[in-house]
Length: 404
Image 1 (tube, helix red, strand yellow):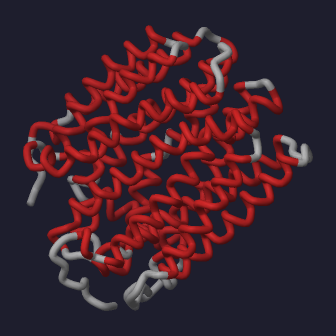
Image 2 (cartoon, rainbow, N blue to C red):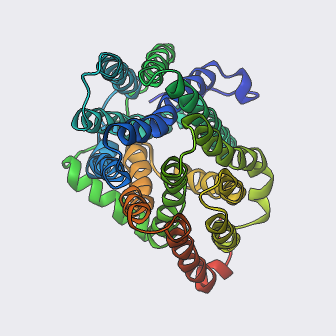
């Protein structure tokens, strides 16, 4: 494994720039799909419950393979894995676009494509994170992660608005755009220069290594917060975002306006990504989580009061401002503490733990909006965030500094 190339700034690092652009386009495609899939399903089935079920099944598929996918990233050429992953997604999404345009699509077809798309994310993301120590210096980990957070929120801000506008023009166009974004990401991944194979190490089977990565997280006092608090946080946040889509669409708002409202949420995350490098030095990871969940609870309650109008997006977006700071702090510690031969699986283990409950959020949101009022449906996720806030503030770890 080659050592990181010394660089003055990330902007002058061509490898990092190619990686960042490729990830942005890959994330943009995923963000377009996040809105386009439920809009298409709602048009095909007129059921928020079924749309939520499809989203949950896709998330469950990703959940099942996430840990072994992380182990796989520690065995193979990471650049080649990224290229193959996005090339496959480009072909599959283009096929779906053709099926939609020719009116030969049914919801089971959308489910299959959504699963392939999510599995691509599950493989691509830990692989792209694992190569960071090869192309940047150790002191740049937090800055790089914050830049990646900004990339993700920018894609999440542009993607829904673009997806909603394109869907309003023609149902097939968002999936064409999705395919194109993956195609360009494939090209940028091919342009990465260096040796991106994982360090040689003894392997003991994908699932055994996956379980070992979870044990590794649990043994670290700083990282243990992911297993104990992050699942409920992500359930609440993912649930309230998908509730916005379901609620607005159910009450007659256009696809374009739904996309703009969802994009508005991500503005908060983008602002947070810009602030993350400055905020990180003033708070520990545990303190950030306690502040985030406490403020988030009040903002989620306000969002429930404003549901199902587009204004409910504003407090959700405000709650996202601190999320990049927490994520940057967590990933910086993870990369620094984890040996190269297990960075891929450790990254996916963090995601697996954090998303353990979030896979159920679309189903919960769909059922709630199907059988309850919009305010009650959104209120469920405000309650979930409130429970997390109580846990975070009561935690003894939240009152002690993170170890150096």
